[in-house]
Image 1 (cartoon, rainbow, N blue to C red):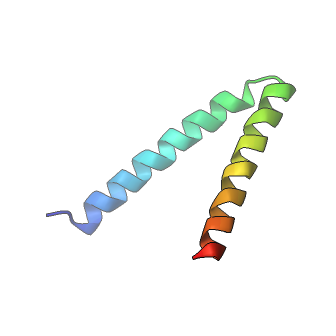
Image 2 (cartoon, helix red, strand yellow):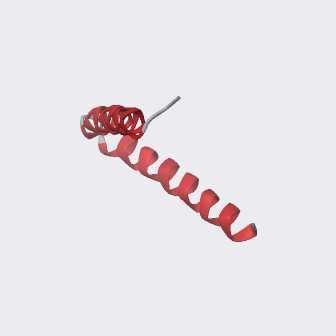
Length: 54
């Protein structure tokens, strides 16, 4: 059975993973950073549209 502490640990691990990825993005050139931003924006827009359609 999962407890709240397990969820908290999993959440912290995911946040650490995202922070590591964003640090790597910070080292990229401007063109690659813009591409990453565009991909994130597209994903977020898609999710918003899906939520509105429900």
